[in-house]
Length: 82
Image 1: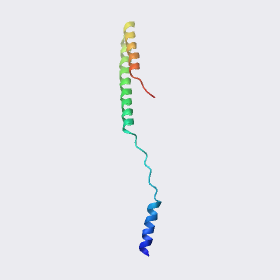
Image 2: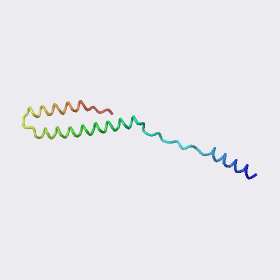
Image 3: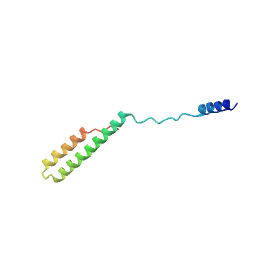
């Protein structure tokens, strides 16, 4: 009968449809970590530019040494993980 044919067709169609595998979204923790690393990098760049500007304006060896010490300290403070 026509009804049986329709039911068979619908059943076979439903069984034949492969579910779409969705690519998992980036976990929230990973997004937060990436955002934090980006902010840390931006802060590092900003502060490094400030220190380099100060270094270019420094007149005495003592000033330059102090600024270079600050640059090294800042670099140690801001550690970047691979």
